[in-house]
Amino acid sequence: MYQVKFYKGDYYHRQMQANEDKCAGYVEHHFNSSSTPSAGYSVVVVGSNASQTSKNWGGWYAQAIGREFDIEVGGNNGILVGGWNGRGDGNIKYTCMPAVLLEPLFASNPQHADYIKSESGQLRLAQVLSDSIKRFFPHGGTIGFSVGHKYKESRPNDRGAAVVGGGTEADYAEIVLDKARTLLEEIGEETTQRELLVMEDGKEVWKHPIDEDANLSWDPVRGVLKIRNSG
Ligand SMILES: [Zn+2]
Image (cartoon, rainbow, N blue to C red):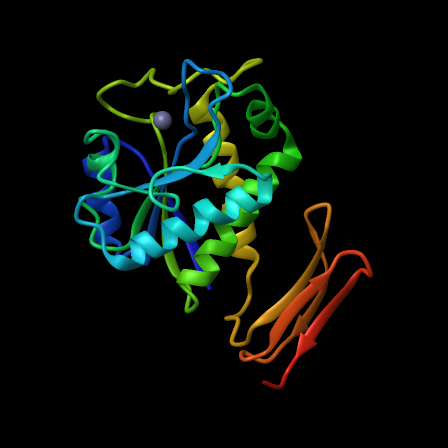
């Protein structure tokens, strides 16, 4: 139900192609970087002309990354409209569909770099992204992916920031997008009901449909998840 298409070339060109293909959503993946090694938060840039759906999607993703990796969210509840003094805006503002520019972790933060370089960290990033797409585009469709920095005509050798310990922002962003593509293309049918999921080391081990109106509460001491269907 999802087809993923990677777009290459200069950013404007990528977006025009995604418009032509009538993508349902568009994702450009980056990692953040700072001269302060301890800097580490999750943020999503949306265009200066972003729709509310782009903002909701980006905020949902940035906050889910915050919970997944136990880190702060930046911007306004995870969202930065129009980029950093305009930087990042042109990467997404020419799209005719909801579009987000992801900055989930910092390449310059040693702990984050460990996540970025590890297979399990990459899978967790891909899982959150694929979950966000399922959430915001429940009927499926074509999803456009763009690797930040890489494959530009204008600066073909750009790979973005260096990752602590080796490698580059763009090469790891591409690995995460490839994993997200696999997860999305494995989804066979539309989810029509709210679901409860148990994950073990990144793998789904149990799934249970629950009522849309049910209340959930988790007692970590007893290890009991309670589902209340009334009032
Ligand atoms: Zn970047």
